[in-house]
Structures are given as C-alpha cells and as structure tokens.
Image 1 (cartoon, rainbow, N blue to C red):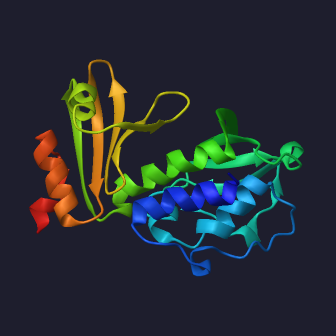
Image 2: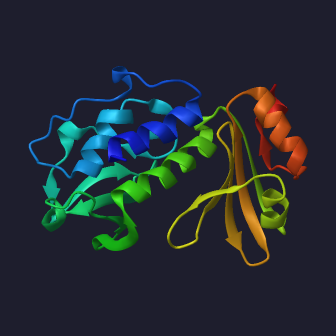
Length: 213
C-alpha cells in the first residue's frame, strides 16, 4: 500500500467519511521532499482537525533548509519542532527528528520513527487533543492500561513508549505511563461516542467536555 493510501485509510476511518481532493493540499515547495511527506500533504494536509488542534503542520510552501534540517511540524507553544535532515531528502521515508528550543538554539534528537510511522501517532495525538471536540483528560490513573485494554484494542504507540493509543475509529484513548499510574487523554467523534467511552472507563476526569454541556 502506498504512503498516500495508508494515510487516507487511517483518516477516513477516524472521520467516518470518504476523503476528497479538497482534504489534501498542493505540494508547492522549492525542495524536493520525500514521498512519505509529500503524500501526507496530498492526502490529508488540509484537514484542520488532525493538523492544527494542538501541534501544527507547516504549509509545504514555507519548507526550507535551516542548519541542515527541514522543519515541517511545530509544537503549539513553539518550544519543539519536528524535521527531517537535509541529507535524507533523497530517501522516500526518512527518520523524523525532534528539536527542543534551548538557550543555545534547537537541540535535535531522533524520534526513532520514519515519517510514515510518525504521522499516524501524531494524528491520534491531535484527535485526543480536541481534534474530536468531545474529549476529556485525567491524571494519575492507577492501573489505567488494564482498565482501557479491557474495553479497547491497542492501536499504536510512539517508538519510545511515551504515549500509547487504544480504541476504535470513533473512540480513542491515549495513555502516557508514569510508573503504576498514567495520564489519560480520551476523545469521541460524537457526544454519544464520548459518553460511551466515559461510561466504560469510569475515570475521575480532570477535564471533561460533558461538564460544559
């Protein structure tokens, strides 16, 4: 399956609809970017709910080489960035690097994931951070993974294990383990989806959209 089709299949399942050409964006860049990145832009680059609710996908027209890196994604407060190395631009699916903003400038380290593996993780992260508007957040949930996995299958995880996702296409749960406890982000495509999720997990939410309805 092509990178384009992999992205399209994932996002169609999350949105519950068929994607159209309007969901992608034209890849106008002075750089010849890797196909795994170009295909993401072309397939789903114009969908706000997966590209800008928390972190932000940069427009392909602004991509440029800076200190040997091509930044294509930025953290919502501008303290972290994601990029590929200039020397890897010829590769179809290069490794993603994260840059942390320090007083000495950006310090880069590998995410140990290629572009095509990294984007699905970030897509789910955006979904639970208000990509789906019906969402909640809880901290210090004991034995959270056992509770979540009793109701939802494992979907995907970051290579470093910092975040793990469970769920079905319309109900997504993210766990950030910390010892025996975990922080939990959860979201439903519809109000009914989130109510169902919240009822199954029965967590004490620090924040829940249901408190505002």
